[in-house]
Image (cartoon, rainbow, N blue to C red; front, top):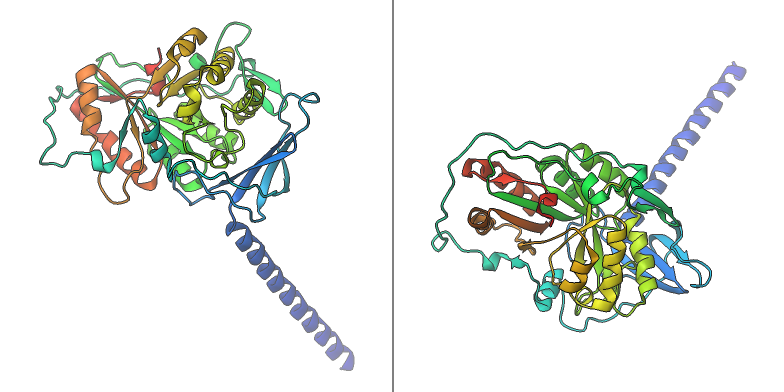
Length: 410
């Protein structure tokens, strides 16, 4: 009897010990992950010993404003570049501890990308809710005769190794030995025998929010072109999902903008104060983020794209990579033309969308009806994605079709 009682108490003791260990592990996990989720993720690229910090939004933080720089310790990705005479490319990103970097104060009272765009004199029409007509003043648009035939198109192909070249940061685009380019190969095909008015829509700022990115990939028509931010995590995975859903892809390049703090643009931003080699290092890092995109687009950049000495080498590098560019701000026209880049310019840039107000897309429809096409870029928010999804379903009834942005290239 004593022997059995002793063994029973031993098993009970071990059971309580095991239960306490499991409970302690759960509490520790919650504490660790709670702390991580409460802090912004930071990307740091150290160039010549000078750390540059970019605090990016965590999944679920869906604003498009440049995030504020934080000096708090955080989980980061860091790439370190030694002296220029030792290496010429950014190395692979590796996990490391954050190094705080003070933010440069804005030269103007610039709080959002929209403020910067307005200050720069953007060549696209910037649409805000205050600009939109109400129902009592909206003009009447002549609607084309409805047709039922849907345009034909196929998803862009999977990445082809022949269209890339190995670099220190991974593979980045290159012209294939047989002359093929990413600008043509990675387009979504499009065919509309009816030759109806077309609207091409680029949804930008994707990858930083898991919810928004999934919503854009899965809820928007496949004819909508998706543009990803270079600082987003898991870009190869996101690009595969987007391509499988039928979308053609673009990559955003952050560039210097008037009044916007340098740190807010991120460590890979292209700046007029940097040499051509320094900007090329950052451009190569950006272009290596994922494979299979046909074009790049600017993120801000009014100051950079109008500086011939700064933008010229970038246009040349993009042309040599076989890419196209679709911009929404002014650029040095002669330099762009000389580069031979396939290119297009947006007609409308949607920004600072309201959280509750409905968007009136009539101005875009009118442009397409009057000229045959309209090219639009809009930053992703929960409201904008929901409204685009509903609006797109009404276009075919009006004799208008959605077309991939690549169809607008010159």
